[in-house]
Image 1 (cartoon, rainbow, N blue to C red):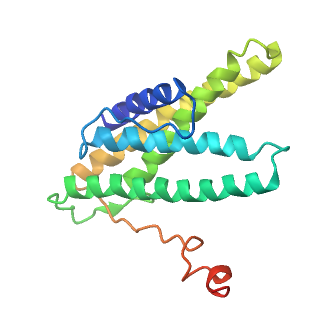
Image 2 (spheres, rainbow, N blue to C red):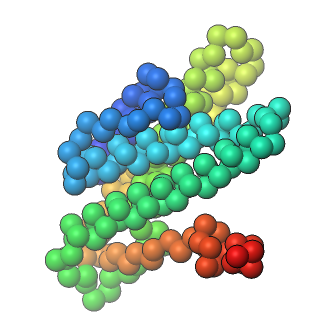
Image 3 (cartoon, rainbow, N blue to C red):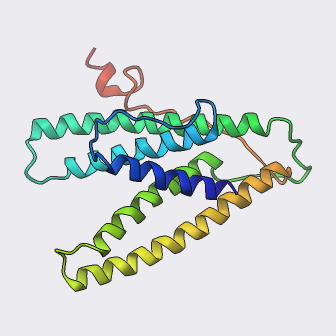
Length: 200
């Protein structure tokens, strides 16, 4: 099942990242370029780094200039994240290019890679909620609330994993077909963002 591979690799990438817990730590991807495992591991590492960038920028005492620098890094990282989703969708498009959709085949509301993107973020939520549920310096009430939230996240992962597996099965068997729209981000493009092109 594809979701089992995703969940395994996301857990590994998060654990590998937290050995150092450094946003700028260079990724050492243990999987071969071109393999789905390589893309999935890379995807979650990108998400994990961005998760921690988001933590830093929310420090209420951060220097405004430093905060702006982090905001720009997050924007750049978000573009990298979007590009990686599109690489993963390209992998699936190529994998199933010879599947003939059935006459009554339908399109899904989101592509496989965008569903996998949500699973990657969910893996991070689970990791960090578990940390909070086990935090020794937190109150019993805090740990109990976080444990309740963790249980909901685990159930959500189970449901999302099944949905992803069902979608892949439907694509493999022609019940659904893929149609991927490239994300046309406008705010980073000097020719599309009016604040940027009116300034030049």
